[in-house]
Amino acid sequence: MAQTDVLLTKQPAPQTVPECELPRKLYDVARNTGAYTSSGLATAGFRSAKYLVDEWFQNCYARYHQAFADRDQSERQRHESQQLAAETEALARRTQEDATRKVGARLQDMHCWKSELQHEVGELDAETDLLLAQKQRLERALDATAVPFSIATDNLQCRERRQHPDLVRDHVEIELLKEAELIRNIQELLKRTIMQAVNQIRLNREHKETCEMDWSDKVEAYNIDQTCAHYHKQSTEVQFYPHSAKFEESASTPETWARFTQENLYRAERERLASVNLRVLIDSILRDTAEDLRLQCDAVNLAFERRCEEVEDARHKLTDHLHKTLREITDQEHNVAALKQAIKDKEAPLKVAQTRLYQRSHRRNVELCRDTAQFRLASEVEELNTSLAALKEKLLEAEQSLRNLEDTRMSLEKDITVKTNSLFIDRQKCMAHRAHYPTGTLLAGYQ
Image 1 (cartoon, rainbow, N blue to C red):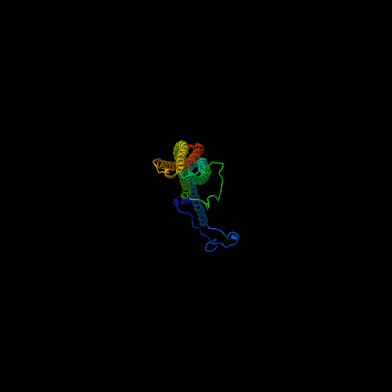
Image 2: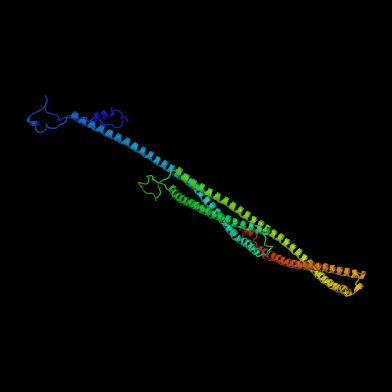
């Protein structure tokens, strides 16, 4: 044993090699051959399969070296295992911390986009409500145009009942036709604008729904990632999912994920801005149409007033001429009566003169003389006949003038009746109806 210890102490220190194995030696069984071998009967049964002492020591040395090498290898493996366990523990901790940070960063990104989507959804919702209010204004304004249109058409129909010669295409009729055409154009414009508003409201709701769906997906993903961020190695909810590390074929990339939300926000903001511009346009249209209708209404009313003044002035003049004509008719009737009386008054002198001449024609012989009396009586008759002819001619002229005056009187009275009817239509019918014309506030759709 002492020799063995000495041999062990002289053994060099083990080197760090991948594997320490001593070469194994095959020993042959000692044969009883040689000078010192015994082959007598006394050694029978003790000579087979025996090792030599050197071989025994060598075998022991081999066992010592093998045990030392196995212990050294085991020690190295323990050291390496401990080191590997520590490294993997640190790696797992670092990996988990990095994954937790990445999930936290992802949560921040999702929270940012979620907030943007929620803000845009709120903006779209508020904008849609404002556009709905404008659409209601358009509908009220369109309903309000029915009254002016009925007033204009009723005025035109009423004025068709005017009598000749007042059935004229005057400035009032031109303005009424312009008003009716303006109202029709405004109604068409309001209808087109309502359709545009309805289409814009539909687009707003579609993009709002798209943003809400994206927001809902992000809320669900945010809750999932928030739950994942709270997991740790002591969590009781964790378990093995062997196939969870496999990527889905339909999975998006961070770039496509961000671009999807950006495009949703961009389209939603674009439609929201379009809605804002449409609201501004609607407000401008309603303001301009209400102003145009009121201006045209004022123009028609002014034309009515001027026309009524013209007709009233014409009726006043016609009435004055009628009064003068009536007076003239009276004077002419007196004149005719006076002429007739004058003609009648000339009959007696003519009879006297003609009787004198007739009686004097019965003078005989030389007494039938053309004396001065005869000449005077003849001239008297001629003068009386001339006077009667002149009086009769004047009487005919006076009677014709009287007939003309009567015709004029009838014409004046008829014209005055026509003017009175025209004034009644324009004032009592048309202008009274126009008093119910809607206000500018109602035409703008505020009521």
